[in-house]
Length: 325
Image 1 (cartoon, one colour):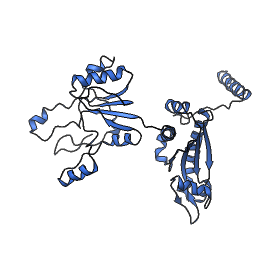
Image 2 (cartoon, one colour):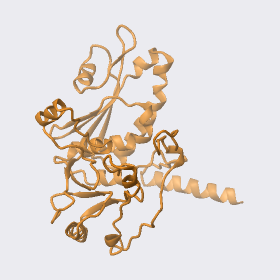
Image 3 (tube, helix red, strand yellow):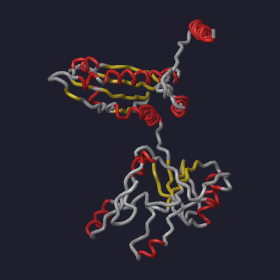
């Protein structure tokens, strides 16, 4: 009785959708693979110009290729289905065109022009699998190749591509940190001079380099009086900040500024210069922003760590000891 009742509801819903002319789409995958995130929906909702998405997939060549190439057919169907969700959610602002570039054609020439990767299969056949996004103002962005290894980041990659195509100016991120996460901000000439003197300029941390690919990243001094001209403030390991800096951070937040605060009860990166062992043991490697967090209604419990053991990496905790997780 219960199962029959459920079936009646389902068939009724299908009938209603057919009558009003709307296709019924249900994502029954465990992880909601075909359901767009709120972030993507926000990007599509603010589109003020049509976007043309050209999906290049050499399907004919793939059928002639080895098993390793034919394997991409399933992934292509997944990518295409996800792009069709973009078309539906954008209410027509995103147009999808699927192209099977054949040898010695304008389609193949255009794929190469857009920087898509080509993999020769035979003397004539080549394999393409990439995406080109174009705006009505002539801006072109591309994903040279869809690697299955980035399937978990597929929606992010596509949404980022669309967002950067329609956004004319990069967002600004201000980084305020007691650690040298930004590296040595020196010119190429100064870097060469330092290397000649046996000094190696400190590179920026990896996450900063990744942010620079998408945003304009600037340093915010730890003794700043006022914080402005940044869209997001990233506070990392705030340690012994002066009152004027705490006040500047608080004012930035109270004015509606978006802030990410990263505190650490024991930072491995916070190490003193070479000194006597006793002084090293007395070094405090913790940071907190409790004076402000409390006023914002937040609390970071002391001596509390959050981590994933499965993602832990090996590190030498003490000299001459075997690495530990």
